[in-house]
Image (cartoon, rainbow, N blue to C red):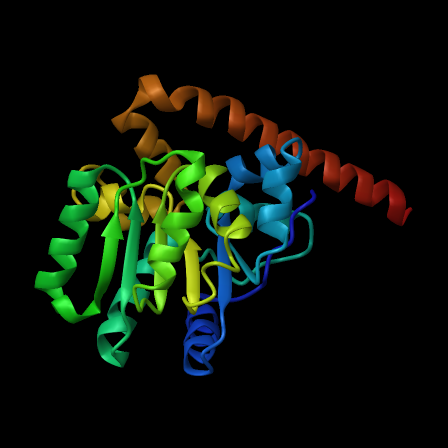
Length: 244
């Protein structure tokens, strides 16, 4: 289905990231869900930005289910927001600094204030909202790289965040870990509610999100999920034909 995914658990992913920071190297991380995999079939720039990352996790229970159906089972879902939450805790414990980039100004400010109160102001390397012109990208990347951050979280929609990180990865070489986190800042800031744990485990987090904004989300989930199911069935059928 034109996507590479690392078969790592949450704990294994966290160890990879910590090892990278300890060695003062860089790790470019990305997550994929059903919608992004569908987009990658036609968006070749996005496909390159994702597949040439250093570490790719499955953020979406549908992707994990599909992997089992295709007999290439992934260990577990590694949700981007859960990974980010774990990494903020790691930053506090290990003395790392984080740069928060994305969302509206009031949202990213709220995220920063929340983490300052929950942990310490010392974990904040800087922050910036996610509204900018294409010609500003390189200056933003340099600002982030010069901030002293060990980690960068980019809360911008796809494919902008994936392409930004891939195209500016060399300018961001001063940051050990770079990651796109989509709408995670909105959740942390309390603007969007996350699904209850039982819905997350049941793979119904998308449905909970749909219920909050049906007018905006129906097309993404109804059409996107249908296309993903068809892709999986096509892959299964093609693999079966090839095997026989």
